[in-house]
Length: 588
Image 1 (cartoon, rainbow, N blue to C red):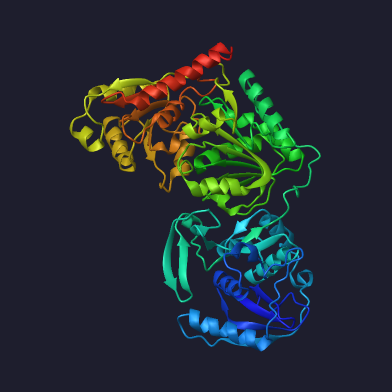
Image 2: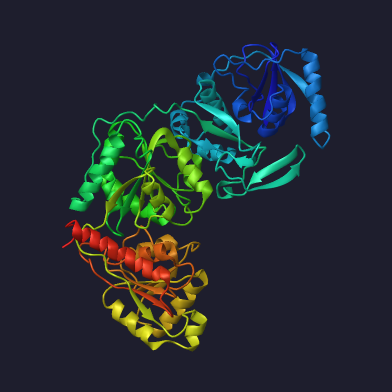
């Protein structure tokens, strides 16, 4: 709850601290407390300023340069008017009353123990946090929530932060200030019409009654400069990677945003071209300049795959890894890896953002996550989008000159990307049908592939995973077989086993179609003509094959009753990459 204070100078303020005030004069506090959004709307009404919520969002009615919020009215009349409005607006009876507060000079330096203080302040910089986030952050730093509020107060009093309503209503309707979402559940609370955002509930529900703490550190306040970043690449970049790496470094080093390119760059790379490592030299330079860098991806599997590679190349750097299963959610570091959902907790925090797999679920088509990426970027920051399968929208931006383009058409081992092959089956491959009418040649194809390496079998439905695992185990009892999907509690453990070559066959949904490398992997897509498997998904699935220098070849089979336009486009896409790489002398 927040509290409305009325000072002797007839100035109204909003604060979550009932027992102390930043005022150096006597004041009165209105009790009981109110939700922040409602208290703000109440004072907005009192100051006769409609639709100005965003200008009034702060620890108190924020006084910007040359701006005050003094209400020149009779003091007792003002107090009575506030209570009268509350009695009218709040649907249940409350004992509204004013209590006196003695003058108090706010002194958090003397009130808050030093242990955990610096860690807390570092971790809240560049953040957008709800109450539950602040409580969790306090626990990580071993600071009670009452002291968390004091530290928030201190940051805001110095101009480093502000309180904002989580959900606001303007001329366009309701909008969430955490994710930018406009899809809300509207309901009637005791304080009147209220809206809860339905688009970012995975981070905890927020409504128009709730407050968010938003860091407002100036964009030119960087992480302390590093004398020298220890950057130890695991291997030398290929010729194609070096060319792309130089272009990214040049783009990152530019002092201003180019009018021709803007703040966005597309890195279009062949599957398995090593696009992530291409960004490491520019990352090292940015970190040495005191910049903050974010590597983001829609899926946690990709983040957990990239994390050890980054740590190995930057051995002396503490890297923050933020996913739904991370032990820490607020670790402070100039280099952060995070899923796109976790990025909704940042605000103007990063100078450089690398967004891997920009066309993947759940990021692609999700306006809330796209909003989060833009909100996390500093005003003069830059974004590099990494993908093997760019969207039509991003290619359109490139054509219109609104986004730069860097291409890596070849893999680092200088071998062509294996072409996928369509193999026709007489009927669908649903497990319940296949169990009664098995297609013998499917078993034969699998036996041939297993001799080459572990086989990834992609299926279009979660319900097919365990069903196909059971079918395969019944037919091939000597094989080690497993499967996984997005909500599998053993997902990480199984993926680690797959990396260690524990399985002969692994059945999965599209969770493993991107960003992860398995040595010797062979691929089979069951019902490749399913509507979920568009050309981008098929390119990515086929791209699991032949990714390593030790095993640059392999097979990818599309099993379906018909050859769809998506399959044809996927094959054309891969063929075009190979032809471009050959023309540029990048493959042997």
